[in-house]
Length: 137
Image 1 (cartoon, one colour):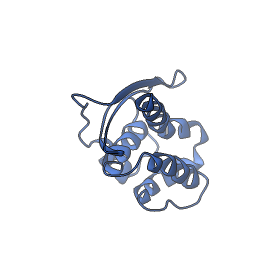
Image 2 (tube, one colour):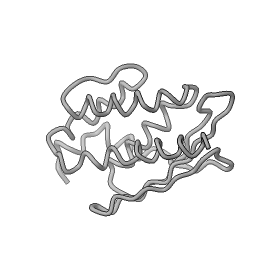
Image 3 (cartoon, helix red, strand yellow):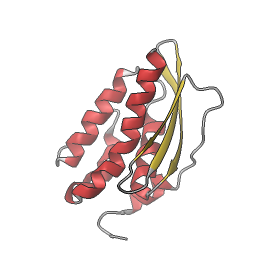
Image 4 (cartoon, one colour):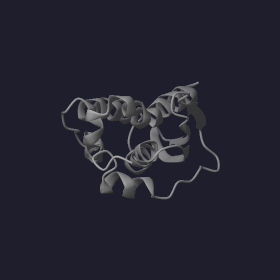
């Protein structure tokens, strides 16, 4: 395990509780066949906002931490906040900063130097985009 990549903040977030939602508005499972990560992400929409996010990740700490940040950040926000989250993550992975409410994505700054691991952090955001698209239909 690379110490510069798996810093304490990432490991702490990855260890957080992961749980699925009982009756989600949408649920999606996505895989990264290159590394074997698998993310199942549930969202519940109520009154035009994201009420809850659930997740189950079978993968590395980067993928687990990314899903946990999404689940902690999105409830109470409009679905458009998911796009802002993806943009904030891309900014961090290119050496920039993340804007509110996505400041916690700064924990992924070390991933900027590990291009092959960036997809691990992005996979939960891919699942989120698919779940929101599914919920709209």
